[in-house]
Length: 245
Image (cartoon, rainbow, N blue to C red):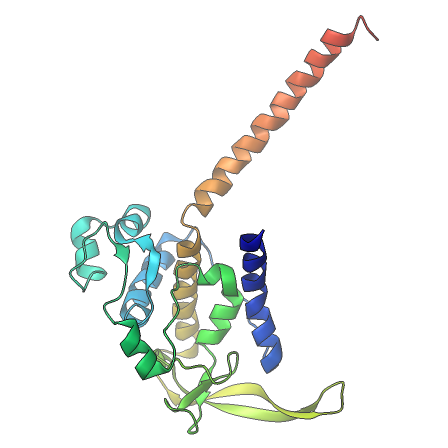
C-alpha cells in the first residue's frame, strides 16, 4: 500500500508544481515506436544529461538490444567511465561533490517520465530563461528556482521572460510568466530544438518502461485469446447445463 501511495504522489507531483508556477504544459507528442527518435534521444541524453544524472535502473546492453547497437557502438557512444556494457548506467560524479556544486544531488532519471510525465519534462527542458539573481544565471518557468543549470543553452540559446500581473481567487496579486522570448539564438532553430527535446523525452519515456511496447503488443493477443476462450466456455456451459435448464 505504501508503494502504491508513493507512486500516486509522484505521478501528481509534476502537475502540482506546474500549477504553482501558473505556466501551462505543452504536449510532448512523442512516438515510442520511432526507433530513430529513441536513438537520437539516447545520444542527446548521454551528451547533455548523463554527466550529472544517473539512470541506475537501466543497463547499457539493454539499450543496445532495444535500439540496435552492438557492444562496440555502446562503448563508443555511451560509455565514458570505464564501465562494462552489462553495467547499470551510473555516473562518475560523487554525490558529495554534486550536492556541494548544485545544492542538491541531481535525481536519477530512470523513471522520471513516470513520476513527472512526458509533457512536464518536455515543457521544463524548453522553459529556461535568463535570471541574474540565480547562481547559474537562469531560472525555469515550470520549476521555479530549480538548481539545475540550462545545459541545453548552446542548442536553444537564451530566453527572456515576459510577465503579467495575475490576481488569484483570494485577491492576492502574483507576478506570473506569460511567455518566453528568444533573446539570443542557439545552434538550432526553435523548431529543431523542440524536436531535439522531444527525442530526449521519448528516450526518457522508453527508459521508464523498456518493455512497454512489447507489453502493449502482447496484451492485444491476450485479450483476443480471452475473448475466444470466453466464447468456447459459453457454449461449453450451455452444453453442460442443457439437461438442467
